[in-house]
Image (cartoon, rainbow over all chains, first blue to last red; front, side):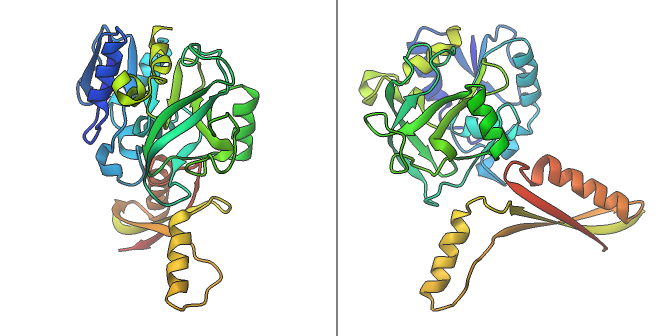
Length: 224
Length: 83
């Protein structure tokens, strides 16, 4: 059962459950003050505006008690995926390196973007080939990935960058970078391959009615 | 125990882009002001009881380290005065 952790202010939790269910997973929302169910086999930190984005996006949720349970689950090898606000929570909680901060445009950006698959050899990306271009929506004001030089080099050396913003043909350019992220980074792995975060929304691109089903492969990563 | 006010100032590390500050700078320029640069900081004033100023500073420092600042993008400083 995939636990979609619902914080006060999460708003993509239902979408996530619906998308996961459509993929054949058992999924349910778990309120952040409740313990993770024993049968939890995966955890999704959904998008939204937990705690009203007070202080910084994800800062409060990252320090809530449920995150200790999430850390324990990671130690047990349970896969964790953070999307959008969930990605901010993941970085703020130190599950993944770096930070997602104010877009270079200083505006909330809500649009479809193209992503180039940088590493197809992970559970979250094995549905794609390296170099594939997929289309997913973004909807964030704080999505600019920042990390120091050393951290960035480490991410590259360890092949932990999953996706970069690109144009329709897969060219990673400044013009195709919607938020000023370092290296056009849109999604990364944590210390282990079982933990991943990304700013774009795979759950919003998982049903034919939504205009793109390119996100299904990412969510399928819960299967391992 | 003495009551202190610890002021924690959090600012972006040099070199980290600050779009809000840039936008604010442009707005000031539109109003006719001349300026070279503008930086944006967040300042927290924390009232707390501690045995001495060092203990108060240490606690405020830990607050900054664990929540008020994000060490990936922020520097911070702590100043303590008796309230």
